[in-house]
Amino acid sequence: EPEVTQTPSHQVTQMGQEVILRCVPISNHLYFYWYRQILGQKVEFLVSFYNNEISEKSEIFDDQFSVERPDGSNFTLKIRSTKLEDSAMYFCASEGQGRGYTFGSGTRLTVV
Amino acid sequence: DQQVKQNSPSLSVQEGRISILNCDYTNSMFDYFLWYKKYPAEGPTFLISISSIKDKNEDGRFTVFLNKSAKHLSLHIVPSQPGDSAVYFCAATGLTGANNLFFGTGTRLTVIP
Image 1 (cartoon, each protein chain N blue to C red):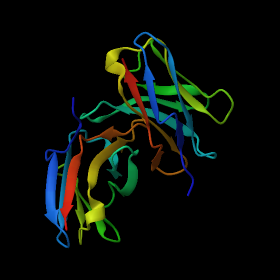
Image 2 (image 1 turned 45 degrees about the vertical axis):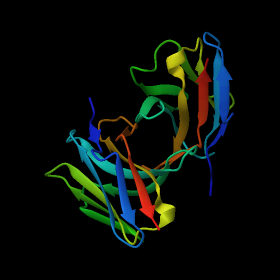
Image 3 (image 1 turned 90 degrees about the vertical axis):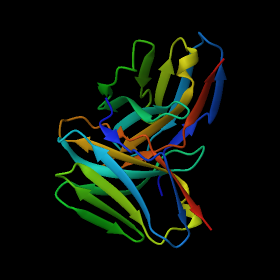
């Protein structure tokens, strides 16, 4: 069964530091997404990515956030200057044909 | 604005009985609905889906029912097993060109042995 792989599983960072969360989507998938879940809250959409550009983003995805697919394999989420409220589980997902998303197991980001 | 709502944050069911998880939505443009199951420290796992052209979809112990007029869907698990204990998220997507999912807040199901 193809998987979406996320690294690291847990990242602790100082407030104001930059973090990069990495994802390897399923190889023949075309659509890529980042979601996050703040502890105890709902899963929230951040951004979708198709054909090497952002196709949609939410209000959460402000100028501090960026995404890249640098090498045709990895799909990264960068947070330039982390804030305490960025602490959450971040999930990457990819989608091929059809409408089912495959999620990675998540990166727990803790900003201290 | 919560477009997908799961009003029961938790549900406990005896093993072998039926679990019914409910979900309501407000956006009539949604045309595809999915249920995800999530264990602690793991990502959501796709469980079952239904298109708006159907009112029922069945996969083994899992059945999803869709009532478009009421903007309501439900997931039935029968018989429930202890391994089904997890958080279940309802999600919806539409024909607006947006490929993102709108998630409900989840229902924590506990199946008691």
